[in-house]
Length: 246
Image (cartoon, rainbow, N blue to C red; front, side, top):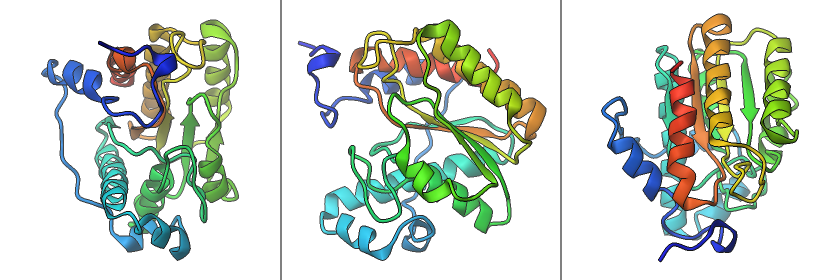
């Protein structure tokens, strides 16, 4: 028996099952296994104190390093002009330099962008965080750097929300890459009670158009929130189709 979204704990098992099932059934999508991030890559975003705290739980640390590695791999794939969605757990946008909450441990967005910069592949980025909750960790680590533009949309229902996203993308400075903190808890049948499945498709399409026109097709997205486990897969698929320009 499936639990409803409003009674499913945020850290419960089974979140990714619908997404894995629906994407594996589509031959257009290929699953790739990443390598764990290295400590030196995490240290670009986080203090040793935070890292040591995460490492006290060996099982948790293994998954957090692997998620960060998945984010890095997604960014490297994006640099080749191929769109990539990192279906990873744990999420990251509530992990700050020296603290974390909300089931986030390492900031996957920050780790991946700072790794791309360290490799000399990028100097600037636009981060679109469409999760229900503001990505305070993204802001804490990257917000002081004027080369990183961060926007968390906050508007009601599809029409206004999508217009807000479009306006800020249109007004953005040119960058080397665009990345999404992709949270699906704004969904109309999730905690946010706000956006339709079609809206996620349109967000993906706007990012596709931005990347095509402004940053040499370089775009990737990392999973953050989404608590209606039953519908998460169809919402991710809709976003990915828009992200590919479909």
